[in-house]
View 1 (spheres, rainbow, N blue to C red):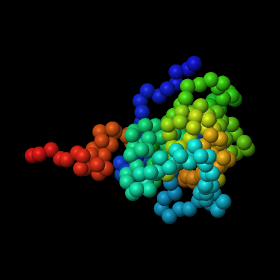
View 2 (cartoon, rainbow, N blue to C red; view 1 turned 30 degrees about the horizontal axis):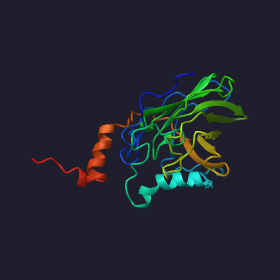
View 3 (cartoon, helix red, strand yellow; view 1 turned 135 degrees about the vertical axis):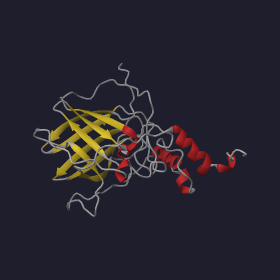
View 4 (cartoon, helix red, strand yellow; view 1 turned 45 degrees about the horizontal axis):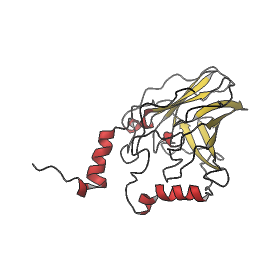
Length: 256
């Protein structure tokens, strides 16, 4: 069995990373294009400056219908939110890898596609994570270690990139609201590009936690003057936030 377990846990939290380096500095415009028939290369992120996605590429989502086991996991994950408390149960708060859907991050965090005929790499600014999509025609492995980001193989369907993912562990969340998943999770992402707009649609298939597949989407804009910045999750900062904001009574300041 391949030992593909990730040795260092890296993730990020909205409460700590309120702004990405995007708000601080922008890179000069870079040359673009891979010369390939299909091209998603470059840096993508939120629409800015009042820009809007083309009609038909607007973000949309489909509410999940949970099984009793999935509902119980959701209720546990969302318990702090319902009490108006900081969500310390989140894997991201604990500086753990976020999983592929949460890895895009909130706000203006960027993602860069680096594209070759054999594979596509996604460099995710949020918590400095990365994903690997194999494009060489290989099937999903019959045996694999459980992975934080899953094992991903992709192909082109017309002009759309379709990515199939599996071999997940059950430790990440599918969204910031607390929807979890089991190790049976299968994810399918479709990337549809129209000019400088990219619609990402993810379909969740996990019969242990959800009665039927469900989908969510996001729309990204291509930014030729952005670059992926450094944005790590630092455990000392998480601990300081917990001591000062989450539970200050249990951690009084040291006497001067």
